[in-house]
Image: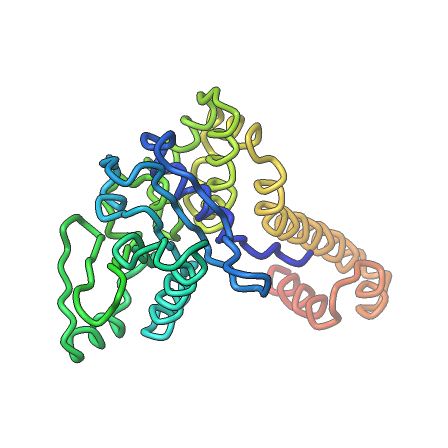
Length: 293
């Protein structure tokens, strides 16, 4: 069975909404916001309903009215060309106002999110005179060179306490982080919030198999995991289940072959045909049996 491709962007959009859950009433979220009739889509556009609203989340401290957000999935590169594309989206967003200068330059910000530090991009910034500051863990402001205020978010560097949802979109989630998210999903009553969390968990579970397999050993966590995302867990475990079944079948075939070898009534070729084992394996079993005679 071909493994299902991890759908990072829907989970990122969900994580972004969860990041700003405390400010939900002050913001409007537009997923894959279309800039025109052609397929130019921003990963997310966050609109502050009131410009003067101070957001609680650290990522939103620099937000103005229109905030372009672009996401790079795990292991994807983030280059100066990606930053330039995001800046281009911001320029188009400004240009498509209903009247001249309705959306001002200072009304728009650009945010790019990646799991790990884009070292090559940061070197480019330094070499070309940009100034990088880090007002909060994992949040880098880029000053100089861009018309729109720009920040880079490094997911794995974000505070575990303040950004648990974006941190789940990585391959380095700890058991405690996964347990907290699963427990939260099981307890939350708001329908929209639960849908967002489950979308995040669907990706996080697929990207953190070792942690999930460890949790599966806990009876309570196993039941909770199966309750909230049985299809994903079943898909994830299927290769291991198949592997165990194949090993068990092979061991059974070897036991049968050993018994037939001891009886000595069939040729090795016949035993191989009967058990489905390669002839070389049967010959090896015969050699092993002779050593104990």
